[in-house]
Length: 221
Image 1 (cartoon, rainbow, N blue to C red):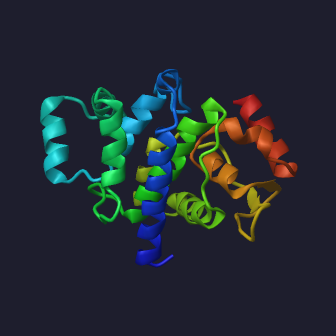
Image 2 (cartoon, rainbow, N blue to C red):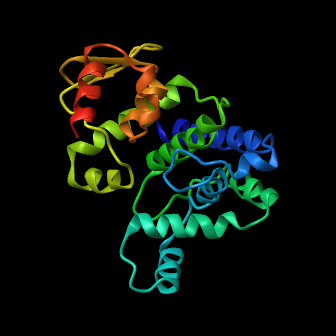
């Protein structure tokens, strides 16, 4: 994807997510998400925080002195935003459409990963569909796979709890995309993306000798 296509995909997914959130019942908002310890509402709060600049980061650090865990700060800031009224959360996600601002230290590709994966973090536990075009999921999955190739990428991937997929070949069953070498692990590209970002819930959707090998590795862990 070029920059225009990337930000167009981000905008479209933000609009899908905002529209989807508008369909939720009050009790859906308090349902657990795929993010450990986070509710659907917490995840929605996090999705309003995709444009934090240096000043925002410094204010957050000053508000919580002595805290050095990135994941803790992400969780705390998400829960603070989650306290806002539902309509405001949805409105803030929709208001970012058309902007190309992104969080300090990342790129638009991380913004795409964030909106796609966290959308599924909310939708999957509710048993509801939040569509992601396969070509968008491919772009996000390619980015997630590439994190292991550099030190900066590995730092970024620390926000996930990655599964031991090294030594496997991931093959999408819904379009032409594959990465890696080794026993084949096959499934829809969106499921492969969730695997790459540490979501074990997708394991039953995967097949092939690589899926069996991954299951055995997890059982021994």
